[in-house]
Image (tube, rainbow, N blue to C red):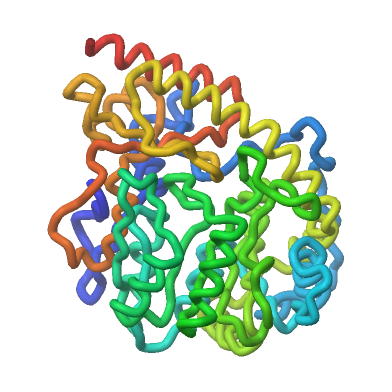
Length: 423
């Protein structure tokens, strides 16, 4: 299943696989999701619930469009939005530091994948390290741009998918890496690098002159009391950067997850000016720039107090959902290698379930028959170009607690019935 592509293609074109959430939603649509008139429970979704949360800032429910925004905006984003993004990072993470981000350290892109694509297109010929398991879309991203060589770094479930700074440096030096890509917190495991540990990663990047590319799209979904008084509930490598134009640290984030506006397709890249210039140049031929009206509408959302209030509300609601989902799945026999410190996913080992449910692909298909959607674990074995012949994580599945609690509970009820039927 992993990387399954359409069986036919035209001369000159390769088969492009549907991976991860895109694949499972395509299969769900074939099974009647959204069209059969029945209630479905999407425990595979890669987006958080988008309604009002207790204590969160008011949700934007209307948009007034300035006629001037019917025209193209700048490829790198509106100046005032770039300034607002820079201010957000400076206020939350760089108080008292002499080196501050400016608009020249920010590039606005039309969504997270577009931002990552800009970064990938700007990379030169070199070895790029990436972790396994990690975000499914990295697989095609790392294969499509062939100016660099993707080098996998396997993380062990026995260690809770932890790699410390010393091990990271050994990988960088031993494998000749010039850049490392990582989601933090990690999708799918929820592994979080924060505090002194995150600072030591940035130190390694600085010392080894190895670019660290941090995908921080889940950096407001942080649990278990992580965070300081200035930015409680939010984690970013920006806190440990010494010189914003010299330290090889690149951060990608957006409104998609942390502000719970996935449909707005507004994201940003933060990093050294030289990197931002090249990433924006890549945007000129890749995507042409983000949605002009929605950029203007994003300004108020990115004010530090609004971001903090939203993050605190997320933490209260999603920490409870995490606990409820984990307990129910554990009661059903699903095992977890580690407690996720972030994201809204649980990375479950199905190997203790009845034999026909102990495989992530089979579990997905049988759950689909119950109108429940999950994501098989093999999609997270990032394998650009299928250079490895074997796949990992066949016994794993990613469960999302992104949906509203009521949907979550009813979806888990159906999974419980599915497991009980096969015991």
